[in-house]
Length: 417
Image (tube, rainbow, N blue to C red; front, side, top):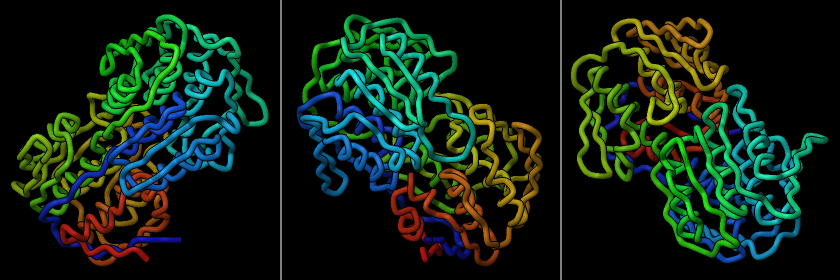
């Protein structure tokens, strides 16, 4: 099992390029199942979750060709319409194939998903939405079975709570449904908008993506298309926090500053010098001492839950008391005890973490519990005194492309063993 060895105390300087967004690439790959024609996707990150999704596409009969960051998918015919447990168990996003297969084939059987152990991410919102579109749903032997032999029909679906994958799944199902579908209380994340752009290129009729109300007029069929995935805002944000926590001078390129608004605003409040140097580049530069600043996670355009763990690591180096409040997932503070092993002062009270700083962190052996917790521990290790061993970095490999190489290119002393 791979681990990272990190010698702390070196500022991140220079430039790091952002990869394509994993959370945009996964639904885009699932959308390829909606047409028998080839779909070509560019800027696909080479991470474990993408490998899992392409394996899933091949398992149902799609032809998948990969050339660097370009993936070409041709789902001319299906050999089966089942996403087996062996593939789904490692990745919750695999539930995204439920809507496309039900819409195109009239049937789908998908194992209940796995993934990071950060709390409930209920698939019931997908199920309720598909039922409103006319699918019959059964849950047996750990699988969800959707049946719509006469096709799906448009409906108004109101999500009880904002769900990114639920919005994406229902949007993909609705593009082939008869009539109009209206998704209310829809997720507004950039990844949802990116998926809509791909679907429109494939011939779908979608309005309102990026707002809380999305309208989809169903069409009989979709065709092939070519699309470039948006930059990964979470990866970019992780690097920006890395530059700030190490007191470096770091330029993060190939990103979209508009998608990083909540983080950039928070970093500035903490005393970090942040500047947009181009339409696709942001620089963080050490300035005054870091100031503690409270943070609450929210759905986009609020502060993303996927940057909460990294922000907590930053607050261990900030002067004062900060309150980090997690509103999206109920079990997303598992990185806190590991940060405390390194010397952080953190107290957990329900969905709130109280962080006192600045504290001198020291190298220790720590263990990743999930994808973003891994990033938090790596950031803490970059500023810690001595050597840190980060175990279970397979979590990080699910969502970060060659992160140790990117960090090393900016001066970090990190080795994969």
